[in-house]
Image (tube, rainbow over all chains, first blue to last red; front, top):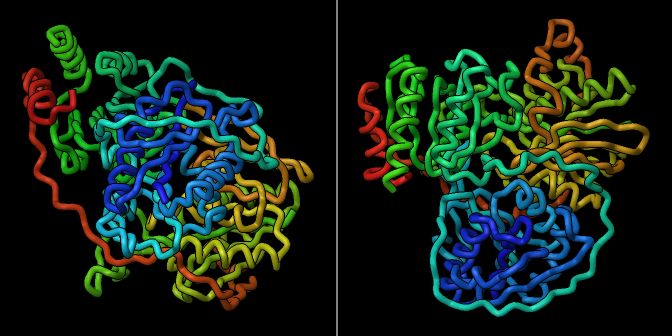
Length: 319
Length: 248
């Protein structure tokens, strides 16, 4: 009956989103008067999960599952859910979790709610609040099936501490045949990704050309942030597509989003407005971004950003 | 190759989002509906397969008669035929069930859907459809090539991209990258005239239950006005972010 949560790891280490979904699973388990079981794939030390409410860890260590495969991961999570007789299964909103979740829903005959931002308002009927209309509204949804699948939005519920200790046991599932084989992975290493970043620094056409991105990267560096860009910038080829954020690009749900020389087209705002705090720096006081931001500076990025870098360096040095 | 492109009928991005009937229904009053952007990238890629490799392309929507202008637009862009499953799209599972029947009856090899619709953002229909069909599935797909029954695709992952090999039958959750924005086609007069002659078959739904139901909608609390900081006083911004917003 325990709530099952899929806790993602990378190179054996748990991601922040894993701790967030574990915290969410704990909240659901408390409401239902049950425990939390986490499933991990090729993870190292799992004790940290206990600090976020997990009672039991099912450790899957299998060479065939070394690289992510949506179908086999979904199938293995479904086997674990069946073993645990779980009625609620929780996953994150990472690219991989979003990929496997609908397959898992079919495997489990589970009704599925994605982009969920709060603990259930009721567990009978099972009712959750999710974002809709690209963050312009919320939708209260009930899941009517016996088994329920919930994908939690990033950075919405938060990571909660809970002092407990998790027991770990090995879980040896059967591995299904797969039909999608990874040939190559092209991933920037040593750089914070937009998906994992707490802070994102984003540049727009106001920066006039790719040669001016040095200060964006330096600002990101000082803040430990990821860099991103608006659609026109990626369309012009100034920055790679992987940095494009907005409705047709990557979604951003960071703690802090700093937009520099971005006017704030509605498609851009749709993609970033799940971020908690937004700062805009733009020469045009009429730019729509000022209506969506928490803090703003009307000014020339080429003057403001170097000053901001300098002030932040001084601030960081004091910390 | 027989391609089916799934088309969501969604409010244009710039639409005002309001609700009626005690916040239970989306207010369509004055709203312009369009082909879901993620689906349009897929449709345009399908046109490429039609022109270069002789594929046939059908489009499908699960919805009421009000979605037909959107299907006609897809026909004007170049799809050969359209299917509308005549039932309200109340839940991702129900839609996937209807689509699975259309795919099985039509013998489609390749199904291209958008990674998510911009209205409900569920992001579940392509994956559920692949699960129901036991077909291969690539989500967040940013490039796709098909040779015979073999396919090569790339998908966006957190922090980069991944290239995969797979085979038909295949379901794609597509997005920008399948084609670029500049490749999108605006229907011309000839396309619009021809679209009127193309078949738009309305079929009745198969039995399926919604697994979820929408209770009501809420709008986010209105946000406060932006706090402006003088360009000569960048220190203040650092202080606000540290002390007030607590994000650095």
